[in-house]
Length: 131
Image 1 (cartoon, helix red, strand yellow):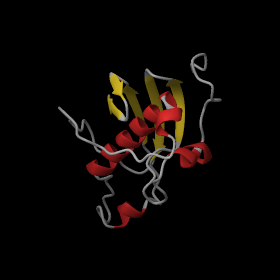
Image 2 (cartoon, one colour):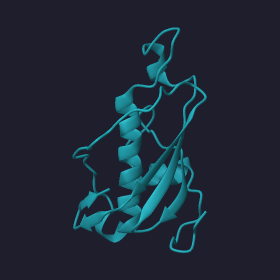
Image 3 (cartoon, helix red, strand yellow):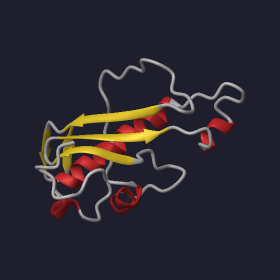
């Protein structure tokens, strides 16, 4: 893990994440930040458990994580990267997701899987970030 450019101790656990994101259970889709290069990149983790509320109805007997929630995890990891890259500008701000290009789901996500969200910050101007 790269901690050289980060002033925060890695990994960042759920308590630290909840200090930065407005989402709460059951809608928090990031469990831990594993790697961080402030202003550059982030790797975050979501442990997908059988206890996730969405598995009750999606689909009974054949649990599959909804794709929109995978994208929500990606957006939350992006919010963490933006916040950790410019906390003095973004403290207390809400992050809004603007869109995705060329998204493809390569396989089904089921209970017991781990999702690793890896994002690179391409551009940040004021309160707008492109990843």
